Image: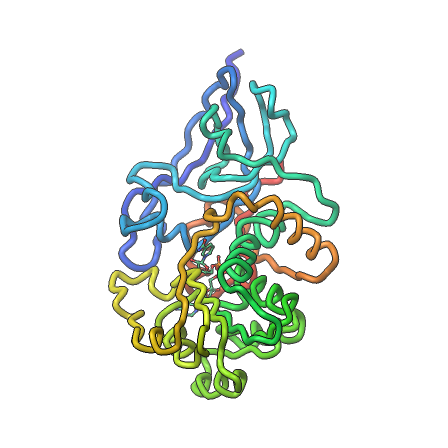
Length: 343
Ligand SMILES: NC(=O)c1ccc[n+]([C@@H]2O[C@H](COP(=O)([O-])OP(=O)(O)OC[C@H]3O[C@@H](n4cnc5c(N)ncnc54)[C@H](OP(=O)(O)O)[C@@H]3O)[C@@H](O)[C@H]2O)c1
């Protein structure tokens, strides 16, 4: 009897998006999972992390990693379970995280295995949490605020995309650091979550016409740290209220990712000079040597209930391209994930 081959569904990049991502930017194909050779491991993808950077990787703009090439499996962070192993360092049932791609299975040889991390078992920290608050998302918030923002007790922090994956953790780390925390988000429900559940001092819905006045009111002593996730008009408005020696943590500029014209984010640099502002971009992996220490702290705060988190979970790998747009429409609260499988 011929053995039935395991099938692997994959999204391969077909065309680069012009504005929003559309399903037609990908070919959704199915191929046999090749047999494992010595040293290789087969990973069954469980959870796929949808991130604004997926949109960046689909373009050929200047970026921090090579763009995904046309015809390549779409790059994506994920968590999976070792389904079969011919490598003594990985056993069936181990959970790993890394760039597993937009597909059902990831076959890893020696080079790919070096880029994967085995997940520790931490009571109360689920796989979904490791894909968000105790994973890359939490690390981005942690390094961005603590290493670059250099917070001092009593200062005022403003964070944009505050009810999203990174922003919601930044604000809570701000509270742990003794800051006055103001979030900017796109709906009344999101703002209520930030103040009522996450203890932000204030939250402003930027879709309300008087939001700039509300920001002024919420930051009577100016702004010391801008944790910038959005760019454009939101960043320009926050910029005008920066204090002397303020820090702008340039984490992301999501308002421009679907836009070929990035001229929107021009700031009057004379203010940066006069107020001696520090504007620093960063990428989470710049601090990779401190990951273990940071994840330990984040997982502890999560287990103690000091950091709360939410996930928006979409079922089915096949929905990844359309679900990605939630990040640009504000459809997600907290971390946006795709559930690929239960096995
Ligand atoms: N530097 C790094 O290493 C690093 C790592 C991870 C993420 N990032 C950046 O961090 C930012 C947040 O990422 P995330 O993964 O946490 O995503 P997220 O905040 O969970 O989702 C994106 C949110 O951005 C808001 N948004 C989208 N378009 C907007 C616009 N035009 N104006 C205002 N708000 C808009 C939406 O919420 P509303 O409903 O509030 O509009 C949306 O929910 C992104 O800029 C991303 O590129 C950087």
